Amino acid sequence: MEKVCDAAEVPPGAMRGFMVQGRKILLANVAGQFYAMDAVCSHMQGDLSRGKLQGTIVTCPVHGSQYDVTNGKVFRNVSWAVKTFTRKSATDLATFRTEVKEGAVWVGV
Ligand code: FES
Image (cartoon, rainbow, N blue to C red):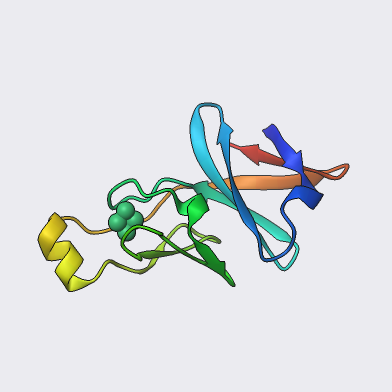
């Protein structure tokens, strides 16, 4: 596990990107519970930390695919038009364990 930030830096409803052991991780706070998953969109490498978090769903800022931060699964894939044009769909992302200790968030990669 690696310490990534103070818990107060990512308040409820917010998310941020961090590098953890060379991997770009998205840390999201959903109603006080922290979730971590890959921050790089599986479709065409959009930076999910620049997307939008609504509840447990993060939307990629590039083509709008959506993932559930609690399990890394694709919630809504790219549109048919985007899929046809790019010849690629989004696929599920890896998630990582989180722990809060003494006011800091730790992530296991
Ligand atoms: S790069 Fe994320 S949906 Fe295309």
